[in-house]
Structures are given as structure tokens and as C-alpha cells.
Image (cartoon, rainbow, N blue to C red; front, side, top):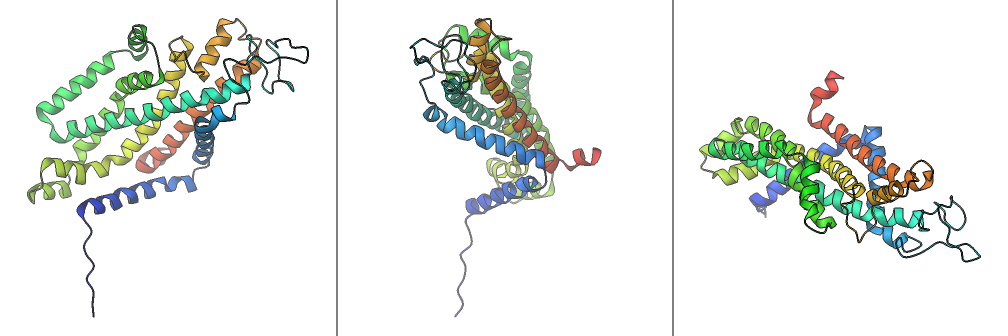
Length: 306
């Protein structure tokens, strides 16, 4: 007695297809050592972003590090009382570093996802529909390109109290322009392929054709620029915090650098400068290493040119 296997639903088929794309694209991890190192650094960063505040030995803002005589240790080098030393205000650098990873992680993650998602959707719609839709969205993109990010972000944050979610929204709202242009150019090519024309000829709606036939084929570009968006968001958040426009209620790596700069000890207290500076540099570099390796996978011409 034979049994018939029920055909999978169209949505489930597309899910399998996207999952296959993700699995195939990330095969580069087995071959690229720099990307593997980047993944390890990112994994450590994610761990600190999730659990850093809980691991901090002291409150990064309220606690004063003191010696056996009860005196506050100001600008103390790494020692038994403070593994990473203290700030000019007697705060524990290790606690600030661990607690500061979380705001950096939140802004980087959601800023990157927001940047990639907005850019992907605008590029997808613009490239697929063309005509006045493309003209409108590309003029909006041109306008965003013409607005310098840092001055505009500072202008907006001048009138409101900065917080990490507002900063995330501002970062994503300005940095989506590059992904949008790249995705659009890819969609312009994909929409002219035979399988897309066949879908249209079979009576599929524009929305269905765009989501089920075009989008999966440009998804790797979206992943790539989401990764780059994470690095851009982390750098932007650190820059804003260094300029004094970070969340005043939270310790972040950018705010740590601002405090050491304001105290006039930038060239003296290396133990205060090094942790946040190395943290920012390490995570942004690692994300770009991963993105570069991934770009070689989705664009083999880059590897050929090298």
C-alpha cells in the first residue's frame, strides 16, 4: 500500500530555500581563518553584551575603589584592588568596561539590523517596481547621501535626551542608504532573469514575485550589509558618546573614552584608554573581516582579482 506525501506549502518551500542559502553562504567559515577569528571575537563580544553588567565586580558608576586605609584610589594602575586600574574618579575600569559592552552591543546589533533591513526593503521595492517608485525612493536615497550623518545626528540629539534606542533609530535612519543602492542594482539584474519572467507570465502578483522569486536571490547582499551595518553602528555610537551625546544613564565604551579625555589623562592613564579603544577596534575590525570573507563567497570575482 503506497502512501502519498503531501506537498509542502509554498511558504515552507521558501523557508527551506532561504535556509539553504544561509547554510551554503556561510561555508566560508571553514576556509577563511581571518573570518573564523572574527567570529570568535564577535562571539566574545556578544557574551559580554549579554552578561557583561552581571559580571562586573562593582557598580561602574557608584562604587569607589579604596585601599586598606579607606582612601579612594584615583588613577591607580592595575593592581590587586583593581585588576584594570581605576579612573580619575576612583571608579573600577574593569567594571566600566564590562558594563559598557552592553550599550555598544545593543546599538550595534539593532542598528545593524535596522540599517540592513531598511536598505534591503527600499532597494528591493525600488529595483523591482522601477518607474516613479524607483525615482521617488532613489531621490530619497540621494537626499540621505547629501546629509552628513554626524552633524545631523548631533543636531537631532541636541533637542532630546539621548538614549540607546533613540541613537539606534537615528543610526539606522541615516546609514541605510548604501545597502539600498547596492540591493537595487542587484534587483535590476535579477528581475530580468527567465524564472522571474516565468513567474509573472504564470499570473503571480508583483508582491508574490518580488518576495518569493526576487528577494531570496538578493538576500546574501542583505546579509552582507547588515554585517557592515553592525560595524558602522558601533563606530557611530562610540563617536556620539565620545562627543557627549551618549545615554547619560549608561556606561559605554565611547563614554569611557570621553571621560578619560575630559580628565586630561589620555596620554597618562593607558589602562583607562586601552580597554574601550581595543574593544571598539577589535569588534569593528572583526565584523569587517567576516563581511569581507562573505563578500568573496557571494562575489567570486573579488577572489579572482586577488
